[in-house]
Length: 145
Image (cartoon, rainbow, N blue to C red; front, side, top):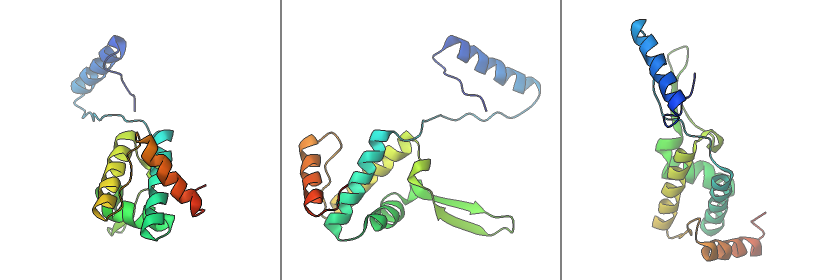
C-alpha cells in the first residue's frame, strides 16, 4: 500500500490520481492516517513508569505492564479480538512494540491517570526533577537498570 504526504504537491497529485483511477475502475479505496511506530523516548518512559509503578505497588514489572497497563488502564488500546478459521473469537493483548506514537501516548496517559487514582503519582515525562526522584527510589531498591 502506498503512502502519500498531503503537504507535498507531487504526493498530493499522485494520491488524487490513484483515487480517480479507482473510481474509474469502480474499486473501493481505504484511507487511513499513518503514524510511525512508538519513539525511543516513549519506549524508555513507558518502561520507566511500569518499573516505578511496580516498585510502589509491590508487584513485578511484568505484572505492571501486562496486568495493570494492558488489562486495566489501557485495555481499549491493547486488547484485540480476532476470529480464527473455525469461527471462534480469540482475545489477546498486543505487544507495546506494535503501538504507533499516538496509541503509545494515549496508553501512557491512561496509565499515569490509573496510577494516580490508585495513590501512586507518576511524574510526567517533562518533569525532570520528579523523574529523577523516582529513578533514585528505584536505584535504592535495585529495581532500576
